[in-house]
Amino acid sequence: MATQTAVAPARRPRGVNLEKWGWVFMRVSGVLLVVLIFGHLFVNLMVGDGIHALDFAFIAGKFATPFWQWWDVLMLWLALIHGANGMRTIVNDYVTTEKVRKVLVWALGLAAGLLILLGTLVVFTFDPCLGVNEASTLWDTCQALGK
Image (cartoon, rainbow, N blue to C red; front, side, top):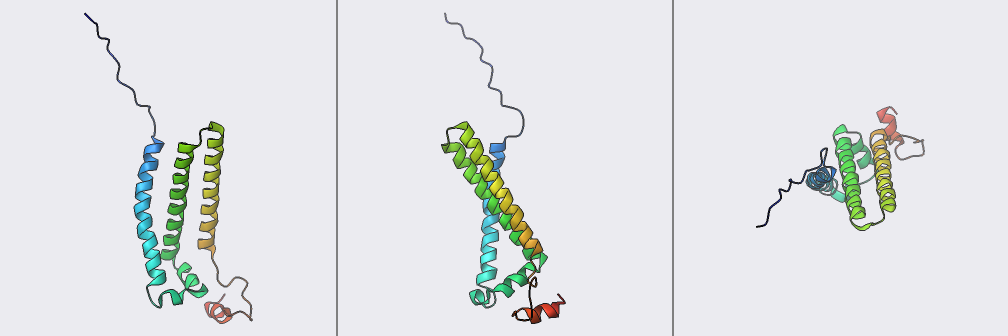
């Protein structure tokens, strides 16, 4: 007669499951990005004069409005984090050397962080009148704005 030995159930590691939350983030950010991108394209290409209205003044007008600043910053942040997380997943799947994997993941994080920082600064500090002189086509507009 064979004796059976009791096997303890496998224990799950405690703490935050970053891979699970990364997976959830990819799904949620993907849906939000579809809405943000198609909204962005619709406003820029379909509303008003459509693509013919796209010029420096159109962008300056959009960036003068907090709603569009936050819309574009949210789109920027989600797109960069979504892309960096996707690349991190690819690196984790295909790079077999631990040291190389860590370097690549750190490089992805630093690149995404730098682009997020610079992009956010551009959106919130954009001033179309910076450096405008009397010879510029924006001179009258900037004078009317008091800049």
